[in-house]
Each structure stands twice: as structure tokens, then as C-alpha cells.
Amino acid sequence: MAITLARICANAEKTYGMKLIAGKAGMENYVRWVHIVEDSEVPDFMHGNELVFTTGIGHKGNDWLLDFAHHLKERNAAGIVVNIGPYINAVPREVAEYCERSALPLFVVPWSVRLIDLTYDFCHRIVSNEESETSLAGAFRNLFFSPGQRDGYAPVLERRGFHDVSGYTLLAAELSHPDKPGSGDEWRSMRFLVRKICASTQYPSCIFIQENYLVIVRQHFSAQEAGKLAEQLAAAVTENYTEPVGVHIGISDNGLGYDGIHSCYHEAVSAMRLAAMKKATVMHYHDIGVYKLLFGVESSRILSDYVDSTLGKLLDYDAKNNTDCAELLRCYFENDCSVKEVADIFGVHRNTVNYKLKQIRELLDSSFSDEDKMNLLLAFRAKELLNMENSKLIMEDDSYECN
Image (tube, rainbow, N blue to C red; front, side):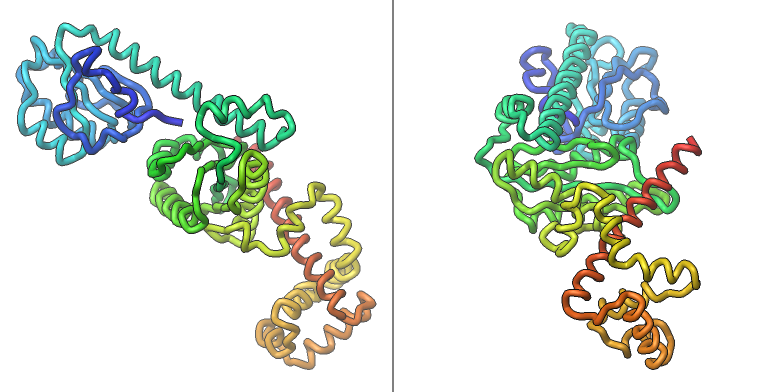
């Protein structure tokens, strides 16, 4: 997804005489692209994470450089490269001191170096890195969806340090808005922020967009570390938005090897979907309980048939009579079959609850045995999943029509 300034500048001093003179603490900044900028006012087209070159042409003296550095920092530039020559004979001390304090890498390069050669080299490294990341993401997608076709992923993963004997944990994250689902483009716009948060690991990792959600593959990653990372990611994303946004992150169990990665992907996505349904920020797969069974059902038709055969009569009765018997029954089971709790929640007398429960038993021809309770609760959970999927489809259709 991105290349660090340290990587892109590897051997730059030896090859081009390009020296770092301040801001070493920012060498792990990610570089989107390189630009040559000569105006003292940093242009509006800069989006952040650019490495900026300047020769100082059109300026008199070096006093303008301090304001220039301030503007670049405000624009979240990755670093500054000053071409020392006829227009800038030296970098003022106050500029170097500011860059050092601000962790904004500041380089100088001699006039004898042709900037076109240097910027071409850097651009080539950025493009090559993007191609490599795209290839790696493609290998993981092949593993997720075609695990039997090993030639489609194993060679690439092995070359990048993702071995079949390692342990893996996956995170899946999606965004949601009050009136529309999140999109992959939103994650792409935050790719440098996400990469910075996920950077602190000595083991290979991969971050990419799958459909409209973010996938993070981490090697040798404990559940506790994954939970902490998820919380940091959610907090950073929320701070990045001026409007309300929901962040829902699913964390897989630990898996071993390529088979483990394949399973972990489905676990992370299942936990993410449940987090969205429950309006939770982070959900671990090992905590989702009976939903493991429901997410394992590939056809929504099977779930729909199960709901109809188990709760269909009750749902039809509510629809025809404008009653809330299904909701009352769900509340009854979820509160340990306590009539008092249900009466308090619904704000009615206990006799009213008992009367409705008698009606429901007769309607469903059920004695509310342990087996009946299990089947009915499972049907309620399946109905939740179906409602979530239907709501998501409606939101996506509305968003498409607006566009």
C-alpha cells in the first residue's frame, strides 16, 4: 500500500549525494509521490505524504524557506529535498531546527545532480512497490476464495515471508454512516493513516481493500495485540471524520499456515458483520457464540426457510394484527424466561405477559421445552442476520440511485 521514506531513500546518498540534515525521526513517513514545488505557498493539489523537491528558482535569498517548511508540515508532506546551488546556497539553521523539532525529514542534494534522474528513480520505486503490494493482495485473495489452487498464491506469499508454517491473525474492518454503507474508496483515502498505525511489527504483514472493507493480515499476532490494534485503528478513523461514522472490526482466531489464513479470513469477516449488526466497534470471533453456526450457512435461503418454519406463524400473526408477540417472546427467552423482567421492559402487568405467552404457545404449538427454546432463539438470531443483510442491500441501492 505504501513505501516509507527510509526505503525510497535507500542508497540515495551514495548514488546522488542526497544527505539527510534534519528530521530523522520522520524517516518512517510514507511517500505517496514526489513533486517539485517552487512557490512559497504550498499548492492546494497536495494531499499529504508527498516528498517535495525545490531549487528555489524565482526567489531571492533563503528567508522564504522557513515559511515553506511550515506550510509543508501543515500539508503533511513526507519530507523536503533542497537543491543546493545558485538559488539556495545553504539551508538556514532555523529551518533545520524547525524540521528537527517537527520530525520533518530535510535533505540537501548538490546542484550537479539532475533532479529529473532522481525523481524518476523515486517514482519508479513507488510504482514498483505498489505493483508488489497489488500482487501480494491478489495472492491473498486467491487463497481466500480458491484455496485449492495453491499455485495462485503460494509462490508469491513465500517470497514475501508469509510461510505455510507460521501463525496468522486477520482483522476485517468496515465503515458505516447513518444513511449509507462505507466504501472501499474511503479506506483508500486513509491508507497512509492505516499503514502508520499498523507499522509496528517485525513480521510481514499485508493491508488491502476487499470489496468495501479493509483486510489486515498479521503474522505471530496475539488476540490481545489484535484487540489493541483494532481499538487504535477505530479511534484514529473516527478522529479523521468530521461527520458521524461507525467503525466495525472483526478479529479472527489464530490460524496456522495457509489453511489457517483461509479460515481466519472467514472468521474475521463473520465477526465484523456481527459487530456491525450489534453496533459494536470490535468483535473477536471466539466471542460470537452460536453465530458461528449461522455465518457458516452459505445460503441465505436456508436461513430464511428456517425462520419461516420456526417463527413464521408468529411473524404472520404480528403482521396481520399489529402486535409484538415475536419481540415479547425473544425478550422472554433472552431474560431467562423471567415474566417480571419482560413486564418491566414492556411496561405492562405480569398477567398481560402470561396471557400473551399462552397465546404464543398455542399459536406455535409449543411447550417451550429446552429444545423448543433452542430452536426459537436460533431462529431469532437467523432473523437478525437476514434483516441486517436486507438493510445493507437497501442502503447500497439507495446510495447507487443517488450517485
